[in-house]
Image (cartoon, rainbow, N blue to C red; front, side, top):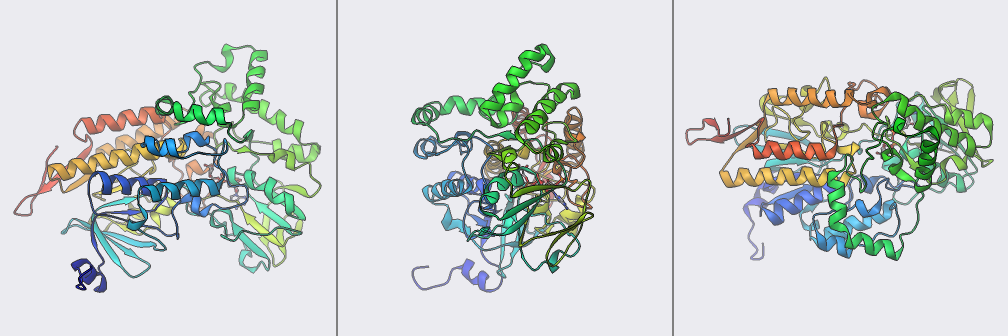
Length: 561
Ligand code: NA7
């Protein structure tokens, strides 16, 4: 206030009930930032973002581990809603590194003047639905309560670190770090004996960088993994110009593709071509590098025999690269079909095992027994270490959501409602939680898609829905139980038509977190198909949702039933 008086909002802040907003958004990564922009700048709503970090970036704010790099090609890892942003921003490499992505998100936040409505260094500790007032009340660790008609969770799919509860972990006298909670000042590995647990996408990116300065690096591998070279390189001026000039075409391709990438999955099937041709195709794809390898044949994720041809090719590459036959055996002993776990891409991962200071321990043969004061003890003995790096992944897709302490209608918690696994309609809403929207939630393509594409679709769908509610004077939206059951069945059906559930230990299934229900969480039906379904639902008056309005005598009437 400029006149020295105190606004109503400020007064309620002091009373412990901070401002009233139209919408509260939790998280200031790709999703939360765009959601704020649409709700505030397009719909004119009063919106507030609550963010745990002291800057924007979300997942990329936290994942500062050595070698952290995006697996989507930079020209597709951008917001595509604004020509101006696309024209102005320039990526430097084929696959951007973490600091460049954070710079990009800061550039967008500044350009759209978003930071003034983001409350940093604040965590939501509870979010309760007040049925009478039709408001979500969000409590924070700063002691405030903010309230809004709409609550949008934009907390990311991979933001709740999974640090395994290995006996003795806290007795370790050296330093230990989880890759998803990496110190901002970095970690100096020079001359240190480092142990890394985990060989997923993160571990595979970190190994080559840590090995450069560590005295020794011991990699504790539970599940051997495929990896394809990123073939990363600085972008040429010619490519940069092409990407800017072709942005409409790139957008069209990403929207038409199964995984939201700027390339389509081939129509050809593995056994449509001879073994020789196939080998040549795989060799070429290996040279091109990255996730494009998976797009060479349409049946790789549907036909086990087809998948075996890619799996065998990739295993043979590991044996070719890794000179020590013992190491090569451990690294190529992969037990799941290719791409049924998120396929990593790397820069010199397997080559790094040719260094004398790098070794691999096969935890399938000699499991970790405990962490001691001085290192990691397996059934085969102790490895003395100065630093342990946990590249052990995340309580993916539901972890961060369930930590928010969400309580819906009739006091039912989201944790209770999802006891047996997440149940959503379109990944965006759950029964019993009116006006609560989840961006890239379980049941949406999310992690099976190039994230910005999935995020833009979800954020825009939510903004359009809220716009309709505001225009038509709708108080509430909530899916029907029938629609949720139908959607959960459909999500299972499309996943079961693929080989994806065959990787029994994948985080897609929640299998990496002890006690988590095993449910295939992301929607495997493809981003383009999902977009069509969501558009169809909206076009049919939000079919499967109940939109309701409170009448003057406080009765609730459905307006689209
Ligand atoms: P991931 O893909 O979940 O990988 C975690 C790795 O850590 C994986 O190799 C796990 O083995 C291993 N792990 C997890 N817990 C343990 C324990 N208790 N002991 C030994 N090894 C363990 O996470 P990332 O961070 O690499 O990647 C996540 C996503 O980020 C990625 O898919 C991209 O989308 C970006 P397991 O395979 O479970 O046997």
